[in-house]
Image (cartoon, rainbow over all chains, first blue to last red; front, side, top):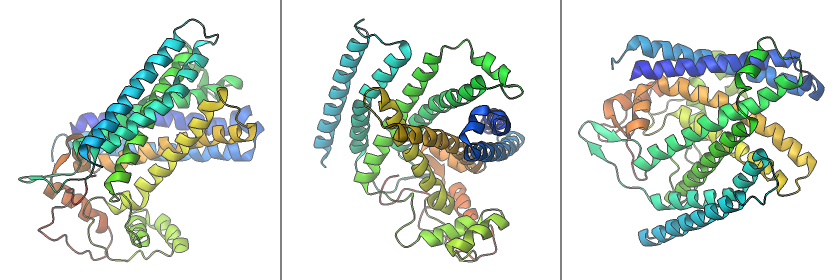
Length: 72
Length: 324
């Protein structure tokens, strides 16, 4: 079960990394965020950074679970 | 509240829910409503909310008060079936509501502007799915979360169970152990303003780790309350005149809460996947006592602070006094 949970964790982390990328890119590119001001852009930037960071941490745990196999 | 009375409340809530659902479906399918599928779904959602909350409260009341500690040899019961099922029901709600909510936000941002590099790929990926289906799934997920919130709130209120938050007067102690587990520089930065003692010795927790009581559960409560309240305001906007100022802030905070929930889910997965006995406990309710004891002891022993061992007679991680 551990490898399955680890693999699912990695998939979820990858999806979140993609979302984090769009958040980060849109912090600089999206005109809607630019119109709403620096707070909206900063929120996208911070949200994207945090999502990316935590997604990497989940991916790391997922890899460890896969490597551990079903050992207790 | 007696068991018989609780059942009466549940049967009344379910009967009212079934009657309400029949009326809502009858109205929606009458052919008399002039709205498009998206708005029709919104009306179905907003009309069903009182019934969803009522059934949730009734189910929470049905669970009643806690039982005593349960053991099966080396195994201790960490969660009752109601908690395990409730957790997974909430998970299904989030799995439906989160991606659909994210698409409503991100798709909107990408569509209005020149998309970020690669954004067109995402837009093309979702183009075949009618927008009202995205909203429909979001409303279904939202209704499941509302049921879950009502159920857990009613249960915690009536059971008197407060194990998931620090006892009165213990917040600083719990926060101290939590801050000690953070990366050193971050922990020190938090400790200063909150006047936390990072060297404070604490015994291993008996049920939930200090991370869970000081940070995880309180922050879950805040973000779920925020997304629930703002979501209700947003959902009400077609049936009740919401002041534009309130609607603007509800929309903004709803998105902020959504992003926080994405981060919270990642943090939850990071924490529990790395502590496998917690995953086992939330899947089966039961967990080997030695395994969960290790998790609870590791929580206080990451630094050099001395920790009092858990007395051998008290099963670590088992339900005691009240059911969680």
